[in-house]
Image (cartoon, rainbow, N blue to C red; front, side):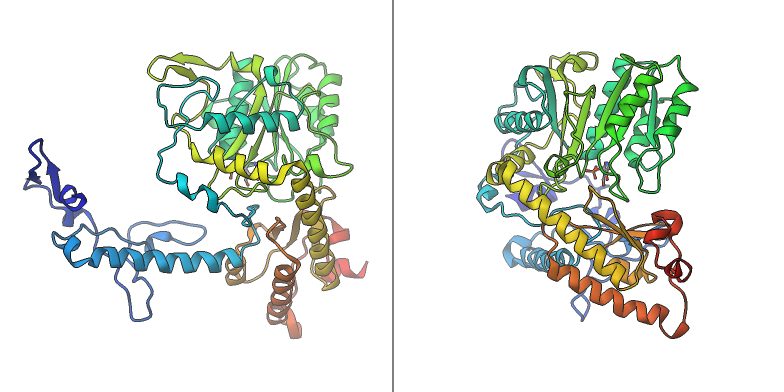
Length: 477
Ligand SMILES: Cc1ncc(COP(=O)(O)O)c(C=O)c1O
């Protein structure tokens, strides 16, 4: 039956109508990638497209080939697809083993949820208002939202939120709510803010002021004050980083609030906290300043596939209920309210989050945070011992180091790089053994790059401060 549909449409009498003559699928799909002798997928030749940065995926894609009429009989197609998937799975296992650069917790067990894969679960619309589509998971979604609202100290009847597709969507939502609350507001964000914040400014055509940062990556409140005073007549919409992307720096929320108030912005500011990675870690770090709605903040977002360890991109966005009325409108077609950025929303993600939060609880997360911080300190200390420049912010598990010279090494460990620096984000799945493997390899490769006077490691004092830099000049001092 499925094969019949693939080659033509089925009419009411159950007969397959042939495709119109002018439709030749072979003309619009390129030839199927064939296995070479080595078992790899042969490259599809792509000459016109030019993509810069990273690797061009169009040279190694699994091409889709139109099914043959007798595929069902021969089973060839099924066999081909099974072999592609098996090979892909093998590569995922290898890539998971050598991953250190992105803040994804790859340690999880969701076997119990496989039974739900057969359902098209969609939470379109507002989480708190049931739409007419019944295959949803709002019961789980609201349970998860309650958990986060409690974590960030906002009463049940005072918050609104939803499970997003990722941290970026949380930022887009937070900034949009800020703009709706203060249509004339200016967006302030430190220059180390995630690019999604600047994307929001472009999308909403908002005036945006970039604020300088300290060497740690935190927002520079002296610069913030100067810039606020230049724009006193307009309200401020401020992005506060609870863990910057590259250096894992946590902006001093209390100082940001103090700066706003002393510059005459009391009652005329909206604060969005971008906690993509660290929003869930910080509550469990001893001595860390608190992110709480008891302070005059307006929204907080976090990614669900980062520290939490959800196997699909997702996130959580929490804001004050009173803010959301500025944004939302009713949609009759949904029988719900339009207050989210996306329309259809992944209904599986809330169940994965619910499952993890139930399994681990606040105490489980606390233990994992402590382990990450311990292991991050271990890595940073061992790097410095080996004479490799490295920095670790006090509240963070993101270890910044000199950018490895060879892109092959960068790719092997999937490191995220910016300019002269790279970082390792120590997540719960990053064990001491894995860090040792990484360190040993790095030390070996470095002797190739810099041994026997071949060259010098770069000076990265401008990025991480002279005290953390182990270049020839700063090692001496
Ligand atoms: C500080 C910060 N904000 C937002 C994001 C975006 O999160 P996502 O990848 O979930 O969209 C990231 C991603 O790394 C981030 O580091």
